Every structure is written in C-alpha cells, then in structure tokens.
Length: 80
Image (cartoon, rainbow, N blue to C red):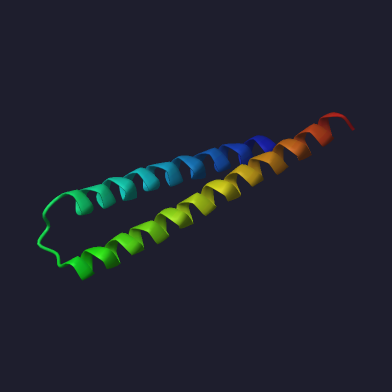
C-alpha cells in the first residue's frame, strides 16, 4: 500500500516538474522575443505565468509533505 502511494507521489512530482519546465520555457520565450504583443498584454501574460508557477511550487510542497508523512507511517509500521 505504501509503495503504491509513494510511486503515485513520484509520478505526480514528475508531471509537476515537466509542467513547470514547460511554463518556464514559454515565459522566457514570450519575454525575450518579439511577439507582436503590446506591453500590457505581455505584462498580463507574464503575471499569469508567474501565478501558474507559484501553483506548481505549492504542488511540489504538497508532494514533499506527502512523501514525508508516507515515510513516517512506513517507519511506524515497521517498528510496531
């Protein structure tokens, strides 16, 4: 049971990391190249990308907490 949860948490972590990398690359491409967007549109897109990155960071934190709790329950069960 614990191994399945750990594997699931690792899978979710991989998906979040890939999502973060994609968002970071799109943000860098939008801010560094000439896209034909106005300054206001570009600022709004950048703010949205930053908010999305913050959501992914929160997901990383939740996964870290989940793995710590999972390890604690595993150790408790081992030493009972």
